[in-house]
Length: 268
Image (cartoon, rainbow, N blue to C red):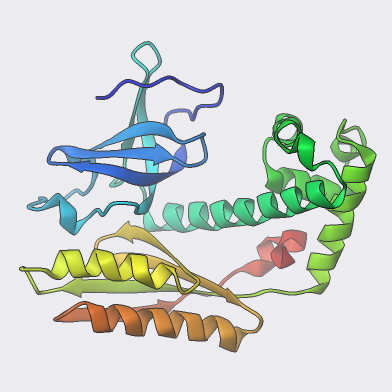
């Protein structure tokens, strides 16, 4: 395993993480943990699938984002091991939804920083916000509930006012989101895997977020100005994938998004 320096923030064993594949080897893959300052982790071959793996490239491609579970941390050597096969489809879905929400709320926070005229202090304010609240999701939840944590926060008043103003504006401008489970496989043993990986990367450029769950299943999510707009992005992405991957089988199953559980964060 490759050694690296730990940041001040590291995951704990059994934590679910978003891992992006950076280097694929015969015996596994190196990944960066995007929620932890791109810390490096290793995904062993035996932890990719419970079945026999003839070709690792049938399961992984460069740049692919995966939901994995931290299985081992050696702080002395500075190494992290992760597992893909130990993550259930349900766990993967919950993690993906939480990650996407945190990403959107991070954007809202940075927008608030600019709006309040504190752009030069962006890095310091981001660090302070995460130190006080733990996540942008928790920050926005505290702000909308006007909790004691929010009232006692040391963030500048003009920034807090800007956050509340942007939250209110976003609540009034509803976003429409659709999600699908895509089952995708190819019988083309010569170039199918290469075509599949290339098609997935190209499809993501059309505004569709695609995350690997477990072979042959992928999670697809798109947002739009209305449901028709969001559905059209999914349709365009699947048509592109189908045209790029020869001898492929592609099935879509729509997910029912339980937005009522997200409460006030639903519209952000």
